Image 1 (cartoon, rainbow over the protein chains, first blue to last red):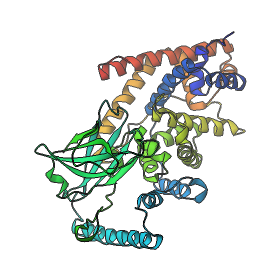
Image 2 (image 1 turned 60 degrees about the vertical axis):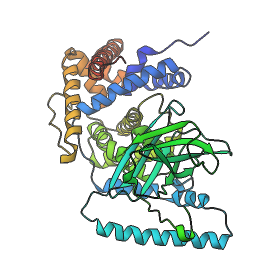
Image 3 (image 1 turned 45 degrees about the vertical axis):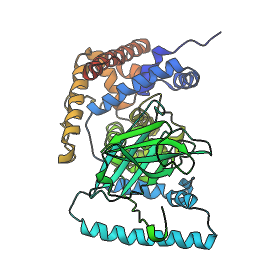
Image 4 (image 1 turned 180 degrees about the horizontal axis):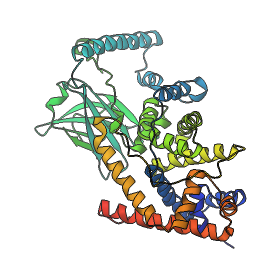
Amino acid sequence: MLEEHIFDLIPAYALEALDAEEAQKAAHHLEHCPACQEELDAYRLVVVDLALASPQHFPPLPLKERLLKQVRQPALQNSPGLLQQLWQRVPRLSPLWSLASLVLILVLASSNLFFWQQSRQNQPKLRSISLTSTDAAPNATGMLVVSIDGEHGTLVVDGLPALDNSQQYQLWLIEDGKRTSGGVFSVDPEGYGFLWVDSPRPLSSYQGFGITIEPFGGSPGPTGNKVLGGQS
Amino acid sequence: MSVGSNLTLVIIVPMDYTKFDDPTLLRLVTRQDENALGALYDRFSRLVYSMALNVVNDEAAAEEITQDVFLNVWKKASSYDVSHAKVVTWIASIARHRAIDILRARSVRPVNQEFSWEEEPLLEIASPLDVEKEAELHQRQQKVRLALTKLPQDQRKVMALAYFGGYSHSEMAKMLNEPIGTVKTRLRLAMQKLRQFLDEERIQESGSSV
């Protein structure tokens, strides 16, 4: 016999107003009942509204930094950080040459970024271009972040389907209908990927951007399904 | 990236996390992106801290709760399914649960304290850049307060006791000297009416069905 729904208890459960025994029974039921869980989500939204209608207070400023310091502790880090992920993407040369080239890239990038920032102290620094998903990848999101002078950019995507080893995603820079490759990239099993955009000309000269599925290593022109696109 | 005569220097450009929606930020948190956690903190810390402070009435405890909530988000982001409820709902429910836990762990709780939404100060605007967001928030506040005024007095009373005081059904029944069944019904009806009113407001705002 199926357990009955507990709709009558849900509003008080959302408010944490059930007595202990009823709360325990409700929690157990909710683990297995999508209908009651959906009700709970709706009533939790009411609790959010009640919170918004209550007096609002700003937390003390140092609290954020205290939080981030705690997060940086080794015990709370359990997956590769960005540098490790970058290292994983460096082409496999001999270990010493790989290390030397990565160090060189980081040193040059840091000094260039320093001078770039110095020359642009008082100007807005970044422009972002949202990319819209297509039917080929309806859950995908993407953003191209471009420096205001259009010279540099980084692409970040999420929610793209993982491809097999024979394929990669390719970024296209579109100007007057002509497509130029901005680079190729892969995504991790959860669909996240990023690309430092390699452009022969300033990114600000392109009117649009698109991402398609291509053979591994890329194609001279788009051949596969478009997954993301946006206008400059 | 190419080498030799065609060396192209690529710059790491800082991301503007304020452009990402909540589910995207949460997905970035699952990849240990602390900037994404920082962005979620910027977006929701006032809500969380306010929820905590309005219940526990103690700034140090409210700070501790706020920190716990976002640490929880950091540790459990990968287990949260953004397709079944909004991120703000999840974060707020963690905050509510933690605040009530702390309140109930206290050996002495206020008995005669007056709880009400009715005489609350207006929001302080966080910064000139947030004026539009603050205006939307203020509008939402007004709608919720309007919805609360439409409740009968006895339902509003149990709502305030439950929300601000963290009292359970049996505790409220004892305080009000009412049968527990009566208290349960009042609270359930109050929440149902609020939900109905606020859902209708959302439909009107969005112009589409829920």
